Length: 232
Image (tube, rainbow, N blue to C red; front, side, top):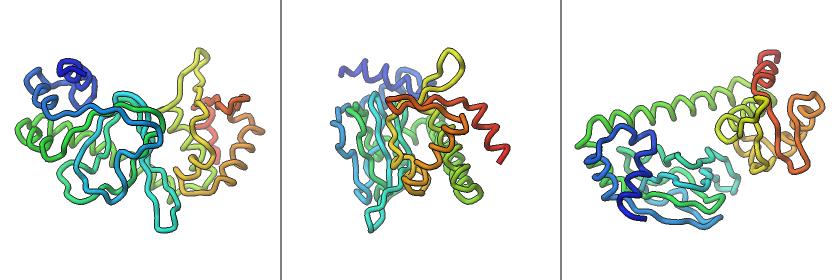
């Protein structure tokens, strides 16, 4: 990919929207574009924290694993996302694994060089803090869900969150959520079991809260799901 193409792509990320051509040129100068195969790992948990990644296409799963091998999915990142958010102004190791779920193209930016650009461009630095702030709020909300909500409520709220971030809006206002997430994936996102998710989804189908076609794709009505949470 040519330098001008990389610059154009980077300008599409919210973090870089308002940068002028010179500022974008500085970012592009330290950027590396690379294709990743499905099931490959961008980095492993406890690897030295060296780079920040921006997704041009594809999907990446961020997850943690304990000593027994139990997986906890932190996030599913897609086109337009950056990761890891802990990379800026922090030394140490990656706190999680990053696995490519489908063939992806990523822009890699070395943290040490990016930090120098941030120091030279205070406005960009402020935008980074805003992105980090939004991430912190999201993580706080998810932690509150686990502490304050029962498993049923957590699953309903998870479906709402996935519908907003990964679903496709249809003509009738409902959201189509492709069957890219298995029941095990859903369970790993909220720290429960696959069996619990399966039973809950079956109940939701019987209660006409969700529809599931032969492919396993879900049709969700966010307003209906929101009302269900309020009634609990």
